[in-house]
Amino acid sequence: MLTIGQLARTVGVSTKTIRVYHDKGLLPEPDRDSSGYRRYDAQAVAGLIKIRTLSEAGVPLARIRELSTAAAPVFHEALDEIDNDLTARIRKLRHTQQRLRDLAAGRIHILPAEVDRHLQQLEHLGFTPRWAAMERDLWVVMFATLPDTAKDWFQDQVDALTDPVLRQLYLTYDQAHDLDPGDPALEALAEGIVTETIHRYGSASLPAEANSSIPQLLQGSVNDSSPAWQRLDSLIRHRLRQAGTEADPSVHS
Amino acid sequence: MLTIGQLARTVGVSTKTIRVYHDKGLLPEPDRDSSGYRRYDAQAVAGLIKIRTLSEAGVPLARIRELSTAAAPVFHEALDEIDNDLTARIRKLRHTQQRLRDLAAGRIHILPAEVDRHLQQLEHLGFTPRWAAMERDLWVVMFATLPDTAKDWFQDQVDALTDPVLRQLYLTYDQAHDLDPGDPALEALAEGIVTETIHRYGSASLPAEANSSIPQLLQGSVNDSSPAWQRLDSLIRHRLRQAGTEADPSVHS
DNA sequence: CTTCGACCTTCCCCCTAGGGCAAGGTCAAG
DNA sequence: CTTGACCTTGCCCTAGGGGGAAGGTCGAAG
Image (cartoon, rainbow over all chains, first blue to last red; front, side, top):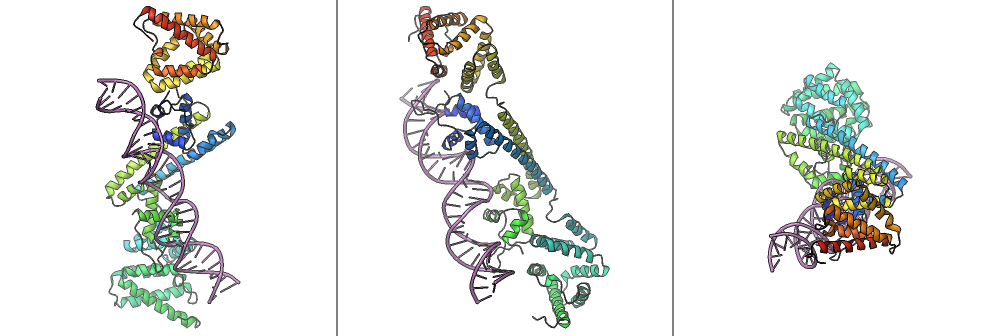
């Protein structure tokens, strides 16, 4: 009858694979001939093809062993399940393929679509690409850490940019990146930002940015890119603290 | 910024996976905070999503690392290749699904289609299911070991069954399965078979079945199922040997 | 101030489905 | 009689993580 190699060739697997199936109890060990070689009959061919078909469908070998001793109705129920699973896997692969093409075209969306649109708008409004990139990183981290809060803040930010005065302040902030840290224009800008901030959010409830730790870390990395921005941040914090203690003497440190 | 768990949740992987990507040099190790925790920035989110997209497309991690340092044209060429690979995998999965359904419906073809058709014909011609099953096993092993020879023999077998005399002999052979091994009908049958065999194949060139080892083994397992068949086989061999030595005295044993 | 649950760190072993190789026995052909 | 193609068992190796141990850290609540 068939040697292991002949069986392997007719079914299209390696001899190793067949031995593994023996070890795991999927395919019964056949009788040996006088020199200890395994000898297979037609049943083995049919059995191996069945095992292979299931295995190629992604069924774990342990499961195939279970199924090999299962009654017909159980077996057919399992086949249905495997079929559905296969359909799901095909759909997922197609989805992955679409994602891959998005990646190739640079169309992968880390951020909600409206945030991406907003970031594109920024350059139209006169902001530098550097500013847009910085905002992008900022929103990525925001949406990653506090998705709900991020959504609110984002809406507020979009809203703020519709105000010409605020928009001009942001634009000036952007431009200040390359100024000398000692430039007096920074003090005027800080003054303007503090005034508008208090006007917009009230003096008692300082914007959450000043309290939560995430934005502070973000601000830190933003500052790292420019000494002028670092000084600007420091000036703004100083003035906001002053405004805070004037309005509410209970606030210390 | 982001801890490993936050990064993992936003991208949809496990923290373990991220550490593996660090170990394999896919994603650079980020800076640590004061307590030794990894802290990730927005770049890391984008990088991880890219890695994940490729990984889900089935690209090995080692390949992803190569690609991460590849120039844009090389990278896009690779993406094309991966896309094609994905298309091929989807096609293969669909094929596997079809095979699975064939398995569920008992429609798996171990043998060439015309052999299966022939086996179905057998029952129409009056052969028992047991005979058909035996023939099936026989052809499975034949086609597995010597595909070309098997094809010729099979054509010869189909041809033989169109002869009413031969067909009747085979039918009688089938029916003899449950006879007593001492039944005189067996001797008559053996006589008829030998006569027809010599008539068909000539006495000098005995059918190859008598020489090659595979068919002998098959005949052995066929005999195991019935003492009457075993005796019949023995009678036929004896008479063929006689006929052989009469026609050609050089043939011994 | 402690304590609790949810994080984080490194280290090490486990899994699947086999591949590869070694060291040795067997077989058929020239 | 050798040669090349088989076969045998046994052991280690792989990718892509999962699970858990042993220990450090964090924020909030009592």
